[in-house]
Length: 66
Image (cartoon, rainbow, N blue to C red; front, side):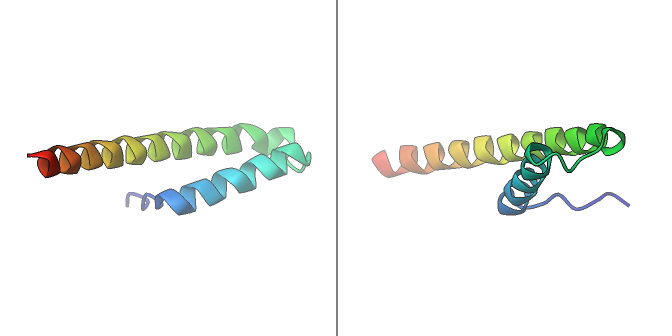
């Protein structure tokens, strides 16, 4: 079963949590790679959502100007 993609807000909260744990030195070498991979996936998801929102806003603005 495919895992549910988090909302933008959920992804950002998780990224902040991972970043905080890395900065505090809480992540050992054994789990660091897994957390970095998760962070990369979350960043990709956030970027995709932001681009989609931007395109939608641009389309709305274009239609309003007509």
